Length: 425
Ligand code: AMP
Image (cartoon, rainbow, N blue to C red; front, side, top):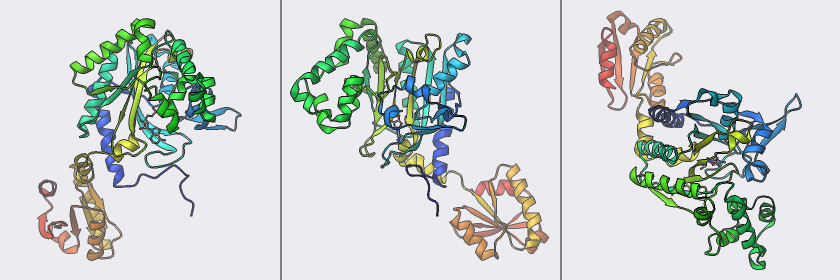
């Protein structure tokens, strides 16, 4: 037996029905907020992620699926969606349209992480990006959209963790403050090899450390906080942050400030946010996002502001409220049609087609070994109704309909069958 690759998984029916419902709702909500879908390739030039996500991030440093293709190019299976969308924005000169672009993308991402509950090497994200506007209302709208979507899935009690990571105006001072903090012997001793590398290459990344001792230090009172530097070093970012918070309060979007939230990607500027949920264990972030006002220019495009988020769909589906899940699994009540003999197949196919044309889902079981076997198959597929069609029914212009849950059966005329079935579904 050849098993699936470590860290990847098959999504089987009926679970795929739940995924489809979630994605259908995402398409619907995005359309309501003026977003259009973009589909970018899974495979991108490795250089794209090195330049955008950042060389010293965990993603680029140790988690990418990178290989040399047969043409000798270094390519990478995308670990996240924003970089590819920003690349497409530059490549297709979308900026020239002179309008904001509100884009979303649903699809697989790949990271070579240690697989565990809620963490896979192939996982799926629902991703949204707004390219163009730089104002705080754009940030607020994106969070309103997010909460609308989560609310319609049935989530209650979720709250956003919010922070500002400043801009180039504050970054050098903040980086210095982090270095100064770890320059004391006692704090420095807490750093393992990975964190020493982070401190040397890109001190902000020390905040991503998974080491409990380092996390404890970062959470301590003496650790520097970016938000404290904003008012004096970058009043514009400070004003942006304040305006966003005021808009969220006005829009009743629940949030908590988390001055230590920096997110594990280098391209963020100003707003960053994350939503975590109980019940997911150690991997409790269901989504994250932030503003990236330099990314497009860094990728060779015109100076363009941007903000986006990515929802981890695997984790979202894992903790989906029971009502939404139940509705998705049971929502589509189906009909199975069973021809009793080979001679009944032709007519059964015709009946099935005409019912489907009227919108009734019909699953034709062509290879049943008699009515008993056909009914057992129907029950195993979870069908609500089974239609039996044999010589007697053909001659009488009727079908034999069994309600599999109620265990009743009745003979219904072929004329008007669709309406009669609909009433019973
Ligand atoms: P990021 O792109 O790292 O900001 O991640 C955004 C969201 O994607 C996270 O909040 C998770 O819900 C999800 N995610 C990230 N990595 C994984 C993974 N390896 N497996 C499953 N979900 C993931």
